[in-house]
Image (cartoon, rainbow, N blue to C red; front, side):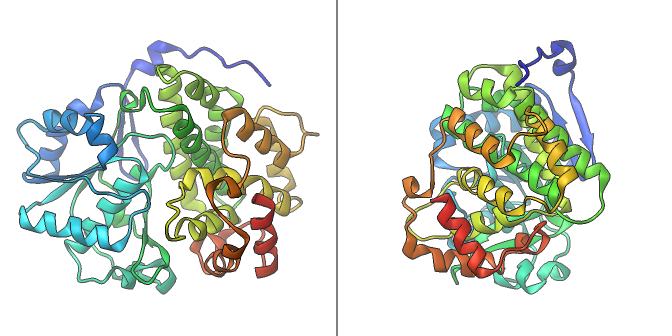
Length: 391
């Protein structure tokens, strides 16, 4: 594997403005533009959506200070690790009680997805279930309350994605999709990820890598999005920025590159995802475990790559280059070795997943939106075998 190249720090220091699906302002310290962004969006009474961990770290105070002339009038910091319908409704009540007119989503995918669901229900009649992709609810979604997304991890890329994932009261982990759910502005400040613990950096980083890989492999013709996906994989793995970020939480260059890889992954997966995400969504809804989505993706990626081998040989060859290995290398083994180097768990059993949970995982994976864009769609028996392989 090639050694990481040193970045051109002059280039890294210049703010990137990425206007593909929204306006993503990308730079160290860019959160200082929050007040002007809120003003531009016409938001005068913003609500902050975040979680307790970020409050303990004091990041909510940084956001409140940055909002300045557009002060935060309400805060919801009870976001669970996997957003559910009950937490969405609780946050919606806070939003309504404070007469808010927009949201600032601070955090990883969970606060951002929860904020998207609040923005939806603030402008549409519920319940959430009617807007789910499994019931083709996209056609019911119009303009939602404005959101400014401020990511604090480098994995989900929810700040530029069309979707929100919420566990419904029924137990289904539902994906809600609409262009209206894309936050109009994302403030991507790598400083907010400096000091993130190594294990969380590894898990969120593999989330980004999985997004890029599954997007590349998804059927359909979209060379621009595939190019973005390939770049995200290469940036994170072959160039070594993910390993550097895990090894040194204070490496600002590595944090910049991983936040960019995360954004790239979400841009790319507009093309589709696959069986890894179908399994991760189905596993993430298991009551009582609160499994981390990025960790699940990391553990399911190798078995699914083994299962899908032969479905897209040219893409597999190019992905090997982006992962920094030779064309003769085994892609699944490469991912397993990468997980081990990053210090991730060796299998699902270490997370509390047991064999009696497999039928339920398979049931939900077969109906998950990501299943239908997989490069090779597993049957129920094949999904069962994939979970066993990941245990």
